[in-house]
Length: 255
Image 1 (spheres, rainbow, N blue to C red):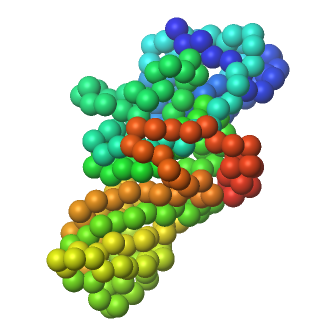
Image 2 (cartoon, rainbow, N blue to C red):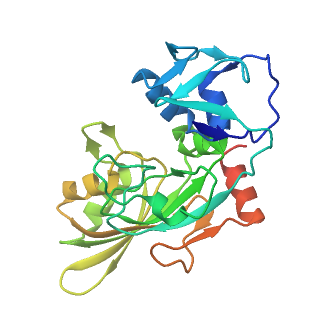
């Protein structure tokens, strides 16, 4: 059984699209819910749910991964956190192979959170955690192009031509990357630090871009997501977003 509360008053008897409804309850972001529906892991009144299916809150019997979604009477408190994900940790709610996930840092909270702005296992840095499904959907949507800033340590020869190539875009298997901003600082032994600002989120994008210009990624850390910075957080630490941070984030997400 999944006990949830609505972050907003819900009118029983009024129909609502199932992905929007479950997202508001904090089950997952809408696109993730659509994936669960496609995989047959969401049931409505004993039948597999369909994409865009309308449901009646408080009346229809909904199961997610075999667990009944049960409304509680009180409104849930929406929460927003910035987490410094360490390298070696998975940016998901759970992992079938038993690897550590970002949820290990929030075991003391009863609120159901999920990550926004995933990082691959080898990378580290800022990830947002929230139970606000609507905001999470906005932040993940490519239409809003929230800037994400990364510090990347690389080895190899960095030239103006290579930097221009990266700035203009690199052709990957899943398409051309959008223009990005890059500043390069030389270190020792043919190593460099790159400050990269991206406005899209292709899977492992930076790690796939840099080999195109013969640069090897040694370390990758995200230091900013939209207006939210990593600050003085250490790996495994998190902080609750301030009201001003939240307002800036919502403004950039068009909420």
